[in-house]
Amino acid sequence: MMCHLFARRIVKRSADVLLVLFLGVLVLADAETALAQYVAGSRAHPRFDDRWKASQSIVILPPKISLFQVGAGSVPEPVEEWSAAAQANFTAATAEYLQDEVKLRVSLLKLDPNTPGASALDETWALYDAVEYSILLHTFAQQARNPHGGAFVSSVNVFSEKVEAFEYSLGSEVSTLAEQTDALMIIRGSGFRATTGRQALQMGTALLGLLGGLVIIPGASASNDLSVALVDARDGAILWYARSIEAADWGDPVAARQLVRQLFSALLK
Image 1 (cartoon, rainbow, N blue to C red):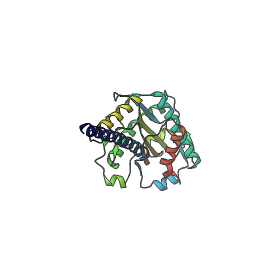
Image 2 (tube, rainbow, N blue to C red):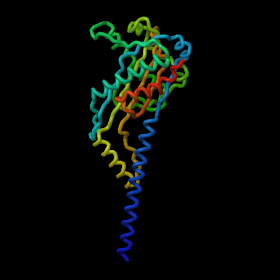
Image 3 (cartoon, rainbow, N blue to C red):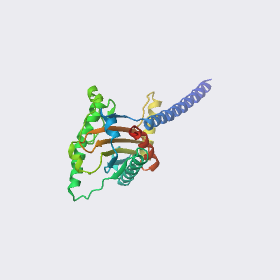
Image 4 (cartoon, rainbow, N blue to C red):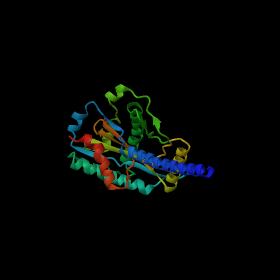
């Protein structure tokens, strides 16, 4: 009799473990799907429509995109090959969309590192770092990336007046970057991709937690944060800003085109 009861308990315990494993897989799948479909949103200048409709040409600044690989030790390591591929893909996708869909004259900003223009570009990026941080902190209620590096910061100091009257500027000095153009496009991104070892560690931690009655949502195997800013080339006003958090492979040109099309649909005239 005792053996029979013991056997029944073993069978029940095995069934419970299988159920937990199944639920764990579902939890992981849902977490990945939710992350991949999430788009943070956008903000626009009060006179965006009028000023943008008058624009006929745009210059795309060289993107700043950094991609990292994260191992089991949780230490992000930059991968230059991934970053370079993502920069090339987003430059091409942005130029293609603005030219074919928005019907603009599109140029790419190419500067000799030894010319005054290169120094002006560095100064523009330095100013944009501070301006973007203020945009994220004061106009987005969700978590935002700190442009100066480090962990994510929570945008708890959202000002409704800043959201409604979205007026940020990089100053009229941006006009020195490119002459005879109406607008500038700034693209910045960062992301990580977990190694197989890290994914296995996270899966094991989540399943052990479920066995103990805890639901642990592990980090995704990939996460990317992309932001874009449309700047009036005449006075430096930021006419439109958008950011996205998703998990696509930025090394894939098709994925880059899909994200650009999703984000830039607001620019169709």
